Length: 156
Image (cartoon, rainbow, N blue to C red; front, side):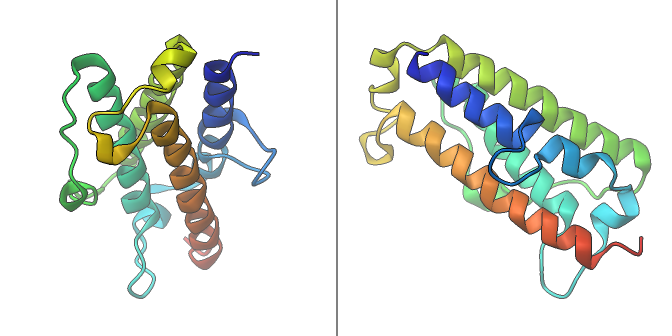
């Protein structure tokens, strides 16, 4: 199996359909969370909705980079989103995450080994492969947080 296919499979595992590492994935974890639970504040922790937006922000931003060659995402905006005040707004956010995740995985699959070894946007960021692997790790990190928040907000 070529490297890009393996990376795309690992990415889909954490976001869409896998259970190997965390025994769950974003799609499964978020499927049974209502908008009230997603927006429930627990102390100073981020909400499930905020973490969902955050992950989607970076995935969408990287998809945009793959399409345009312009890296326009900034950490300071990665938690800036409109309030989730309804089931419909929560559904829109989740579906956006899942759609962008599949789009991202398809981009990964299209990359040659040569492309994976190219510099990503700027030399300081390393290669495409390093950034894709970083996104996978970033997603697992936040999936763990969401799993804990689900337990803390289970009454909603």
